[in-house]
Every structure is written in structure tokens, then in C-alpha cells.
Length: 382
Picture 1 (cartoon, one colour):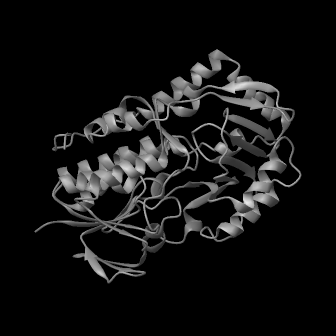
Picture 2 (tube, helix red, strand yellow):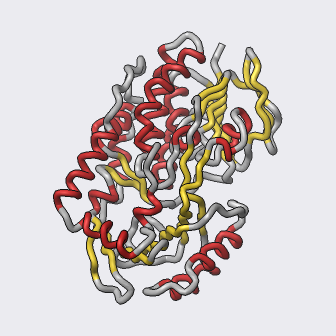
């Protein structure tokens, strides 16, 4: 009998796992709250030999390289537009940089003919039994699956339903970020005030904002409320901030979310398992996409090598938990939006020091490769 899996989330982690499970002979359904694959978004990147190896085994490395944006230097300026330092593209763009929407679209293209995608729907309940997980949906009829995978991000519905409320597993790290489509072009430029950052220009992302804030309560699907929060956060700003804020009400799209860190005591319970940001996410931590594709590979490999899901889940967590520590302690908020002008100056000086920059790049490469990938019985080529 064919094994069945429901994967919640059609971003990076979910379709990556769907790729492997399909090739293992599973029947895979992917459910996604959004009505279609999410376009655009910020640039994400892959670093080092481990990330390359997984992409190559998936047969995706050449296609990802063909769609890569390429790291671009970003100029840091003061309120009068004077250059303070340059953040090199190799620091922000890793080894292979690609827009998140382009990566998600590529993964969807590779799996949509073999896996069932259900867009515009979400899971409302999970009943985990010895024989399968009975699932109800917002729109679709109830179904039962052998396994359910929560690959639905740091605000995971699967984690909430199977493990408990989000407040028990997600820690707000004191900042928010926003991506706003303002149609900005020109040289990639970053500007800071204490507790606030603005980055515009280039091809990496829409206009990018980071600001310090206590935890907020708002509707993550209501664009108008997100725009009001952003306008309030940047009131009275210098440089081009007033001009940019004038454009926000008419912006075509906005995505605002907290900089937060997920931590769970275990990655699985019964027949339900967490993957990617749902288990080990750290917003803007710089390793999310790498952890997603590596985690999907490891989980699939252990399911292929095991005779039961409980053993596979245990080995998956044993391998991934030490590797995922790269997302455990970082907090991008104070780095991107330092709390004082002194801290802004220290951050900028790092980029003016070739020695410190090389040390940072060596560290990220070491962290990105700090796992021994298990063998997978499948040949990597499709």
C-alpha cells in the first residue's frame, strides 16, 4: 500500500520534502494557506559544500544557479547621503543567492505534476491515531494520512495544533521587519537611525525595513493594519524616510512580521513532525533556506532507511538538532537596526576591516557545513 503524507506549507521546506517523498513512492499532498505560490520576497542564499550537495542531489543546483541574483554590494549612508561603508555582496548573498519567490516557484514546478497541491486552504484539526492522522481543513473534506509534516513557517499551524500554542515555542526578539513593494530602483543603499533601518534599491528585495518594537498584536493577513504599524514606527525619520512613508499607503504589497526564534523540545509527536522554520526558525538569521533543504533531505533519507516513522523521526532530530544550532542564538535585529549611534558605528567598522569580514565569512561557512549528510538510497537525478 502506498504511504501518504500531508505537508503543510508550500514555501521552501515543504516542496523540498515533497520532491523526495514522491521519488520514494509516497503519495504527497501539500496544503498552503496562500492562494498560489508566493512571488517575490527577499533574497535567500546557500552557503558551502553541504548546501551545494543537497541541491545537486535534488537535481536543482544548475537551475538555482541559473536563477541566482548574484551578491551586490550595499552602500551604507548617513542622513545626508554620504557613504559610511560598503556591505559586500559576498556577506549578504552567501555563495548562491536567489529570490525566495523564485526558489519556491522552481520547487513547485519540479513537484506539481507528481504531488497534489491545495492552495487557499489550511488545517483546522489533527487527530493522531495509531493508524494515521485524521485531518480537517478550512475548505476541503476531511482526510486521513500516514504522516503529517508541519513545514508552515515560524507561525506554524501544525505546531499549534499538535504541540501547543505559539507562545510556548516562539520568542519575540525585540524587532519587526517589513518588505514593501515601492518600486524602488538604483544603487542598493542602507540607512540607519537608532533602532531603525531602511534598505532600498537593487534587485534583492522590495524596500526593506527593520525596527525595534515590543511585541505587537495585529492581523498578519491585513495589509492596511501592517501599513499603519510601519508608518507609526518611522514617524519623524530622516534621510528619505518621509518620502518613502508617503508611498506606503498605495504600496502594491507589504509583508510585516516579527523577528522571532522558534524552539521546540522535540521535532515530532506521534505521526506529526516539524520541518524548517516551524522547528528551528530564526527570522532573518541567514540560514533558513539552507536548513529547510538540508532538513527535508535528512528527514526523507531517514524515512527511506527506516521501517517505522518513530525511528526515522528520532534519527532526523538526532542529526538536525546539533546542525540547527546555527539558528539558535543569532538575533539579526540589533545588527540590522543597532540601538545606538555607537553600535551603528561599531557595526560599520566591521565592514571596513578585511580581517573581521574574512573571519565572519569563515565562521558562516563552517556552521553551514557542520553536518554529516546521511546516504539516501535514491539516485539524485530525476
